[in-house]
Structure formats: structure tokens, C-alpha cells
Length: 299
Image (cartoon, rainbow, N blue to C red; front, side, top):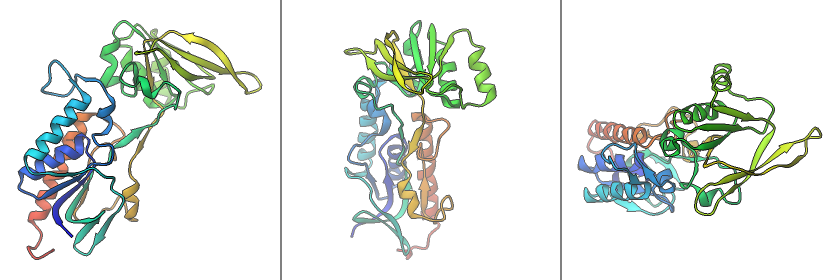
């Protein structure tokens, strides 16, 4: 069984940045990239807020560049899902190989509405990140789905660019904190549809409208608007961290020596490519330092 210095699980900005730093530190590095590699940026179009690309860059292209850079310095990439991570004496067992240290950078998945045309229009008007995409909706009408603090934050960011923001919430009251509710309800650019839900996104190659239902007095859902015109839909109903592998360690968040975590799998606040990349850098440097301090016969 091949033994690596660093095994990285995940191939988004955190995982690939960790790979670049680990490989450049002359550590034998492997990335278990997943059967669908690249993370959330593979679902985006133009990325304009990642430093170094003043004209923007397509999300998949950015990830391809990160992968190429990691491979240039010697990283081995395996296109399979990590199904097991276990501490085995002084080593970790990851799928069919072993490693002296592990960085879990498995990211998080956006919770979507599962509408008929939602996935097809991601990156073409459907988004889950206002700080990433609000700029593209300057002077346009957009909708936000959700009722928590994240939805309030998305709406407030969008008001800096959009001409009108409509929050659509399936209940009769927000669950967001009072101060966030006040900021939203006091903003003249924001309108609210309570007891309402989006049932489909309309448009051929971009978002052009929404189909919306509302709840009647008998709590039955019925068609409210056949075509509510908007240029964008921002889904803010939460993210699910891909933390299943961490559940193999019953003392989590206390981790065994040699195991590090980076990126959106533990970051529920920022959720940006640049912060994930920074966390990947930190994890790789921490792993390098930890390995340097281990007895040479530890394997």
C-alpha cells in the first residue's frame, strides 16, 4: 500500500491550494478529488472577485488552472470519492492508500429548491451567492428565497446593485434575527412575499421569471403568479457541509494528531473561494510543520 506524506480529500479551492503548498514543500501529496471534482466553482460562470483575474474567469477554468498547478508540483490526483478515513496506528487509511497526515477539504453543498429548471439555469441567473454574483444584476429585478439570516444578508447585498429585490418565504414570518428583519423591512428596495413558494424558474437560456404559489387559509398551495418577472433567483435556504467523513472520529471537533480541516466543510460564514483557498494554504503549512516534528521512524 502506497504511503503519502499528505492526503487531501476534496478538490475545490481549499483542497487544491493545500495541494499546491504541500507539493511545493516537497511532500508526497495525493488528492482524492471526488468523482465530480472541482467543488462549487464548477457550477459557476464568470468569477470576478478572485484576485489576479481583472477581467474575470470562468469557474471551471479557474479550477482547471488550480489543478494543473498542483500537478505541476507533483500532486497525484485520484478521481474517486473518499469513502473511508481512519487512523491506523501512526498512519491514516484513506480508501486504498495510507498517509502520514490528512487534510479534509470536502466542502459543502448548497441546498437547492429542486425545481424543474433550477439546475439548468445555475450560472445563468440562478445563484446561491449574492457577494459573488450581485454585480451582474445591476439595475435588474431579482428574488431571494429563504427566511433566515442568510436570506436577509443576500437581499441586503443585492440592494446595492439591483433595482428591486423580492424575498419569497413559505411561512408567515421570518426566522431571521430581529435586527436583520428590521434592516430588510426598512429597506425601500426590498419587497416581501410571505406564505409563498417558487415552483419553477422560467427562461430558455437565462432567468426571465418565476412561477409562484401561495398558501390559502386551509393551508393548501395554489397557483399565485404564472410568471413573476425577475432577472435572477438567489436561493438562500442553507448549505450542507460534506462532513460525513468527520463522523468517523467520535471526538470531533477534537481531531487526532495529523488530521486537519479546511474550507467550506467548516466555514458556514464566508463561503468564498478566496477564503477557502486561504484555509487550504494554512492547513498545508500546519501539516508540513506537524510532519517536521514527528519522529523519523513514526511510519
